[in-house]
Length: 125
Image (tube, rainbow, N blue to C red; front, side):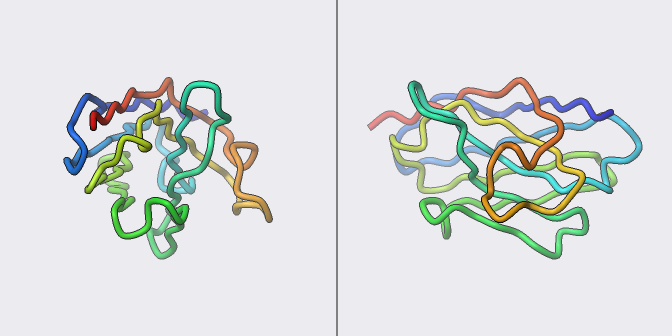
């Protein structure tokens, strides 16, 4: 069992930066791949970034490549999402998820076993 708690969301102007954190409970955090998803009003929860348990593999949705960076610190049981050059279309609730297995052929929320409660990110134009 893994419990996840996101933090770091807020309101920033376009072009600004935020760093989201996701703190995990449990001694097996280092065994899980971790991902960030986001959900805007009226839309489905969609992937943003993912990182393997060892940090040797990272994945990003095209719309955030070059702007967002996912990282993790297994000693602190925490995964981060550094978000730069933010745009109004990045506004959403951001969720972190933990997965036991590899991402499937379609990168969706189904691949993840545990979720946090989410943190709101709002970008003003």
